[in-house]
Image (cartoon, rainbow, N blue to C red; front, side, top):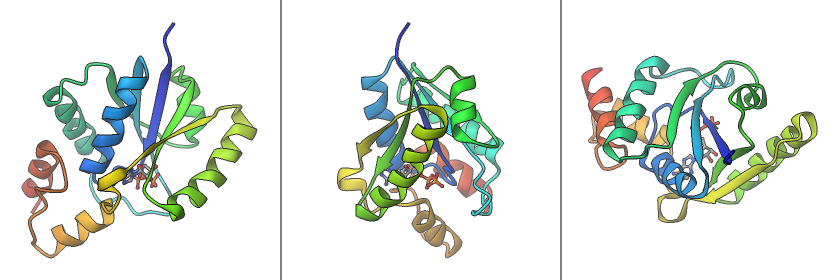
Length: 158
Ligand code: ADP
């Protein structure tokens, strides 16, 4: 039995920053599950079923054979356990991310006995889904910031 990591997020949309974290995680774990969750604090911008298909196309293009995508509702730890994941994965861009993530991670450890593994954003740490949407909504090019299949999806919705 290998190690399975569960990378949860809104991925609304999935950016090159998210892809970089997936690539790092796919090298470390036997299997990585990208979980598109529903954060009631954030309004869904792009249809999650469409985003799932776009992410699957990115994974195919990048030849990431040990990564799959699921959509879920409710608690991340519940879905992660259902998927037989051993550990949660998150990306860290800066100190603000760290403070935010640590609170969630501590609760997840407490309620489900699941630890979290952080990967560094590095040079893509400036990138966020909201910056991409800001550009997109103002008709600026987004192709540099998201994988090709995601850019195609977004551009098809214009
Ligand atoms: P959430 O709503 O759960 O914060 P996001 O889709 O915004 O979902 O982010 C999912 C995860 O990816 C978070 O751990 C976040 O810190 C991380 N992340 C977001 N953007 C980047 C980036 N540019 N580089 C690395 N990690 C990132």
